[in-house]
Image (cartoon, rainbow, N blue to C red):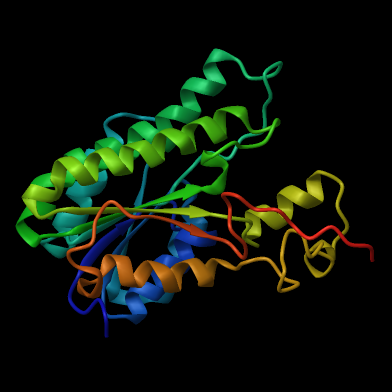
Length: 258
């Protein structure tokens, strides 16, 4: 078991990538604080994981929420060895439709909350020589026209990861970062249906977007997360990894007919 006896907070872990990471952490011997905002989903995941998991519901747009999550983990398990800042508000909006309220909420959940999570947990992470893993997006590099605030927040999160790695390294706290590509999560599936795609859209992904013929699953991301949360990756910190099926920077896809 690669995470035996570790305690890890996974934000946004009642569905999708966060849920997959939480489940994999428990399978590898960890105890996990499950976090989300929907009680039914949270209780379902927590029940499936048994005594290795506890649930804390909270809204990360509240600046006091991160401290409550950390306190809940310490009360439940007595220590803290890792944080996965996975929760994010994935919101559509372009330069015409993104207003101040939307932008501020996106930054609060996607950037401010991860920073405050680390701040609230720092003494515990220093004591355990723990690890932080921030879940970003390939949108950090340029983004999409209809994801202005979200893409901007993921660029900021990437800089936050690098900054904290540099600052916290002398304390023995490691910070690494995933820029995740297109993942077939339940929320992504429903979003594409709402935007007019057919029910079987995951079976018809153009090769330009998925050379393998299928986009990534949350379980792919979870498998990678184990290494960065565990001691195998020690002392590496400050890494930014693109998890996709092709190079994100400098790509020049083959131009060919059907």
